[in-house]
Image (cartoon, rainbow, N blue to C red; front, side):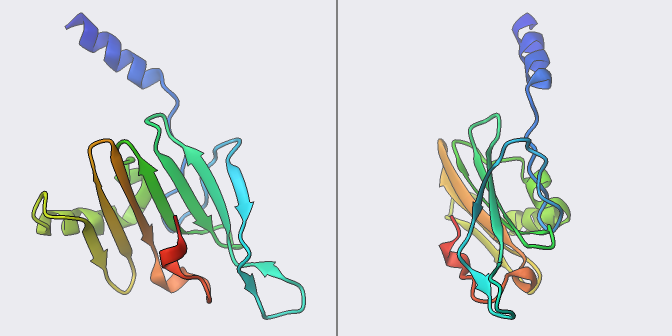
Amino acid sequence: MRFVKIALAAAALLPLASYAALGGAPGTDPAPQMRLRSATSNSSSAAVAAYTVRESRDADGVTIREYVLPANIVFAVTWQGPVRPDMAALLGSYFSSFASAGQAHARGTGPLIEHNDGFHVESAGRPGHFFGKAYLPRMVPTHVRMDELQ
């Protein structure tokens, strides 16, 4: 019993992951790796990046990538790691759609894929290796192929 109390206390003191919810502003990680993608807008002579990628790693070793529009809105997230990330925090208001899809999907029968006009999620894996992506189709920049997101 004492071990459980110590473990719970240690877990409470660990740094929390600071990634954004889908459709919100990017996370507040003080030193995320930022990478500018080559996808550009052709609306003017000056090249404007279609999106940037913020990459961070949570306390469980899960790599989270946030795909951020110039308007500072996360239009997609991807994850890969030994466990699933905190899906409620990652998906924000779209978590209920994810949870509903999970309840309708028989456990252990393959990847979870849910798609409607406003939300798309793919989640798969096995113990030790989970991965997935979620995005908002209406916010995806023109000429961005969602199958290229890692």
